Length: 297
Image 1 (cartoon, rainbow, N blue to C red):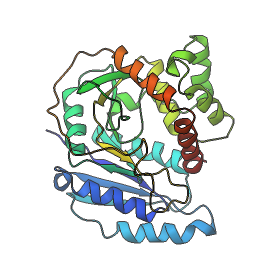
Image 2: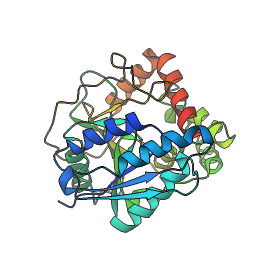
Image 3: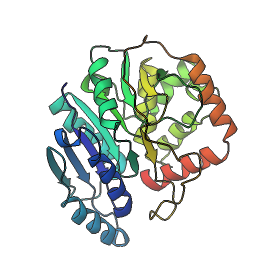
């Protein structure tokens, strides 16, 4: 099996970065995998000390086949840094696993990502493999949902080629085809408004553009029935995460033998996700929106 390189994007959160790295090192395939770390530069004097602390820490990382650090000499912002970093690495390797500095992974995360990439490598309808799933009961072991996602994921060069960075183009096409309600999980998740906010400079989310790009191409993402990722980035100070008992707390000890399934959207699982979004309003959307503003502006 051809192992995909891992690309991790970091900035000024040393504690989060350390949790992310320690979990990745404990993955079964870590020692056989290449790790690329993109470290953004400070955008102001207030961020400089933490940026320096992160950069000093990542220089100590081992446990991977190879570690390559790319230190930005100016502040790119997360969206531009991610888009550039993914494009650069995926054009070299043809496939990629993408991580941010607030994602703690299961020891089986890399295996799931690589097995997914290998299993569906020739299926052009598949946009990506995703490691995170919300805590929803009675989901199948794996299933497909239209679009793409951003909390621990993998993709191929052919899929990333459909990424459209121009949010206005995406919005125009979404409206032309009258797909806003469907893209918004039956009006239960405000992707369209998030895209409008990106266009208007209220956020700089690459993730909503990735989701809508794949959605408009009628492409699917493979999800696990139980999460391989826990997001620890919902604390407001950017220090130790305190959200250990809320809906982002996930048990990460399971594993499964990934097998190929029919390549169609799982409507029943999508309905369960719609009900999850609906039942967790406004807490869920408020916290996600807050995180996006904090990370992407």
